[in-house]
Image (cartoon, rainbow, N blue to C red; front, side):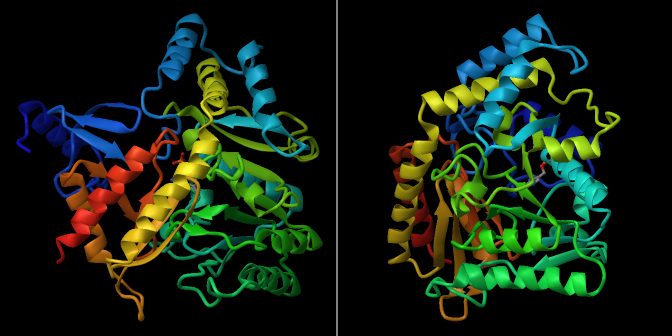
Length: 433
Ligand code: PMP
């Protein structure tokens, strides 16, 4: 597409004022102007189907969320040292979605802050420093959470208090889809890490995990994985932190929270959330128990200027209403599966597709150059994304080898959208290399 002078100016100023290392999607970046429901529109008015934006859970520019934000911004916006009803109502509604006991909400502004706070509390309460994680995870950008994010500390060296455990990847890992005990076997590696640390006189403060691995390559946790880890963690006095920043709020279809897809007995000590929480408006939180909160916070050590502000609460509350009233979790379950079925059917004709996996509207399509060796088709994956973009469909790679399409559309995505996506991918793969 031809560049307009305004888009040229926007890109030039961006290059002057953003860090050199700040990437854009696509080799020929798109200047976005607006978005509605599942479509973006660029400066030429060209439409793009959005299959990558997990933040806008209820679709872009949802009128009820726009209205909730605008109304509250015009009425009152301040901080949590005042009492305002919208915060109280939101905290009640939010905690009602969680298992009993997870009652206390720390409102913050980003997923990084939520994880940072959970880690800090876990370390303070246990008087320990070590943290066990799942390899290839990403938990945010602050110093503390970069130190537990392999994709970040890879660039500066793993801190010796961080202990990565194997990605429970049934496509590539040592226990496959054909192993009914894969969950328990992968869990054993985590329990072994706890045991080793305890034996070395430094039992862990926490086990920090995502309920579906995003940066790890859209990896679905095998059934029976978290329960034995939680039992082992309890045995060692380690706390559990569920990072729901990517997958919470009904995206996985089967349950409102990702950890709940692993069984009713899996109840974390901390749940962190963000992204979809405000449908694009910055809202994030860490939720824990009253007992933990009391032990950490006797003197009121936590305050966030913007965390829990009335506008954030009004948007977050309205998002919960919209998810419920529009049946979005159910749509994620049903249409998410329909999308994966369409993509799996493509695998019969396109050898590049090695694996199709996911839960609800959080899916991965892994590309390989050879199904037997599973050699990652990293270059091809990026080319597929570029070609899809040229056809007006947006999706992007993820995973340690960047060979997995990460599909996380708004939960308003329809069967027609899924058909459109599958047809475009079919055409693009048909073009060959
Ligand atoms: N946890 C996970 C799983 C994430 O994907 C992200 C962001 N990509 C974060 C935490 C950090 O969230 P934020 O960018 O809002 O700080």
